[in-house]
Image (cartoon, rainbow, N blue to C red; front, top):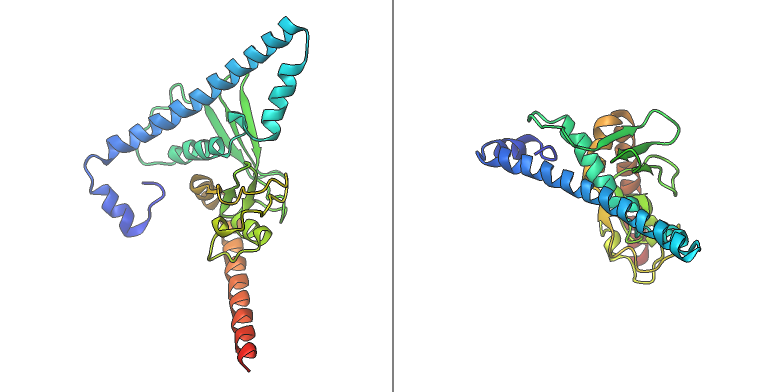
Length: 233
């Protein structure tokens, strides 16, 4: 509902059963975040006990490896999407009970834009929303299979594919600009909830980037057409 606009939003409103579906979706999002919290706490306790029993640091080294490879749930871009979803639902016109929900917040006023998800006193995830390529707040954010976040246009440029074709059309050997892992573009996902959050909380920046991206695409298109014409001459 909150992703729709104009006529599509009106059509959604006509569905009498929609409110129940919407609240059920919010509840499902809450359950998923609670699952992430329980998983993180359980894994931490298991690895700590392993190290105590074996008098080693293998457990903590294993957890650091999971974090580095974005295999731990607290490092997953889907947790960013769930957090953005929860923040977006706070602006909804529907009454939503916030009891037992984790505390999610965003900060775009400081030098580094962040989104934070506090699931308990001991479990907290904080994500930097700066694109590592253009060094600006991610615009139309995408997450590669390795978990790293980029602007959609930056990811396409890194994979040497046109924006209109999409990053999933990247060659299988194309590597993530950060971790250099190959084959991660095919598993990329567009973070729609995060993009909506940025559009609402950073209106001026979002409009400027949208205008700049359109100008760049038009320039690239004209350049391509010119090269095609010159190629036939």
